[in-house]
Amino acid sequence: MALTTPVAFFVFNRPEPTSTVFAAIAAARPQVLLLVADGARADRHGEAERVAEVRSIVSSVDWPCEVFTDFSETNLGCKQRISSGIDWVFSKVERAIILEDDCCPSPAFFRFAQDMLERYASDRRIYSISGSNFSGSTTPSGHYFSNFALMWGWATWRDRWADYEVDPDMPSEILRRMWWNRPIAYLYWKRIYTELTSGRIDTWDYQWLLTLWRKGALTVRPSVNLVQNIGFGPDATHTMNSEDQMAMMTAWDGDCGLEEPTGAVQADNTRDMIDERVWARINWKSILLMRFPWLARLK
Image 1 (cartoon, helix red, strand yellow):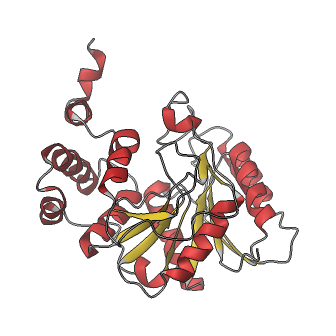
Image 2 (tube, one colour):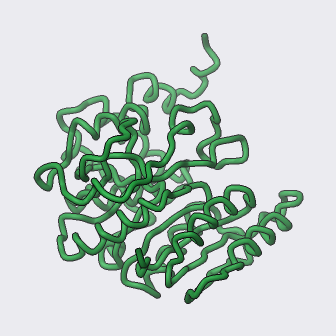
């Protein structure tokens, strides 16, 4: 397969996973590569050297490829670096496959993302393509549609990203519309967005979920998992538990079986419930811990 879709790769300070993911990108040989890197934090010993090593790794492009770079000399942090980096990506290209340094794709992921970007380019009901599936299935059975725009390897278009807001207002009306009949899910997401809009959560990805919910849009998801998160561990920003179930998930690689949708263009609630249980961990316990973190110290 000729990978004509531009690939955007976001990196920071972890040479080992960066090298693994970059090798997967190099094997796919994209014709356009956009590299986005954050700068080192001045108070972290040795980080400047690790940042320099990472940039050296991703600059070693040895296949015919047009390369663009957006390397920050200061540390912007997760929220600003990734959101501003994606803005920069779509100032260059109309569509892109987007990977972070801990999201290792199978070759099937690139085929799937490119095919789905083409198939749904003019369907405004679709805002995102994701490579994640947490069901544990290893038998491909097409693709489906989801309310959850998971971003461990994903893709989108410039015109959809244009609706993104990095600093949204508290989305109370949207949450009520989405989760009016699911009180536990409603309370969970209300807590997430309360923390986000108050500045206590420094991230960019919940805002992308909110973009889709605000527009009533969907994400295309594969029936098998196509991207392995190799970044679980103590040096991660969010995925620090290396014993987590999701850390054990591998990436399927095949050459067919994902092309056709499994049903109508609407959220597959059965599969979305798997995401709620495995990825979001939506339950009363998680809601209480978000509100009262000191409860984690109690037996």
